[in-house]
Length: 111
Image 1 (cartoon, rainbow, N blue to C red):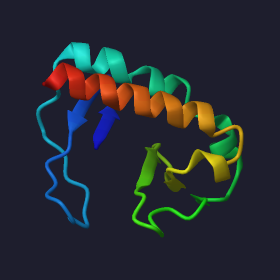
Image 2: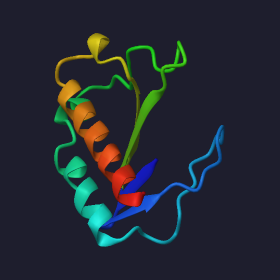
Image 3: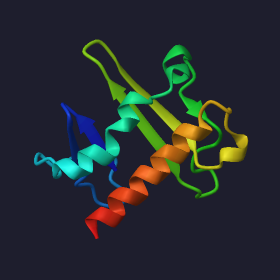
Image 4: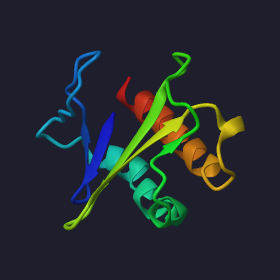
């Protein structure tokens, strides 16, 4: 899991099964941020315009969940999204594919 904040990218420090979000205080190198930063710019406006916070049936069948959270000075908005693209609204699929591409690229850069 990663956090984009103040033009920096932070990796999580959570152990498996952890309930609370915990991120490193030290940002990853700039090349990691360069890979992830487009996600902030392409965040789907449709998510912000809709009060729905859960899409699909996240982790119902141990398929995992895509967890997004957006903080502003006034609000914190979480979304729980199924990994099965076939049951998601069309507006979400390209963004989830972009997330997948970014996380794969970050993993490859880290290894």
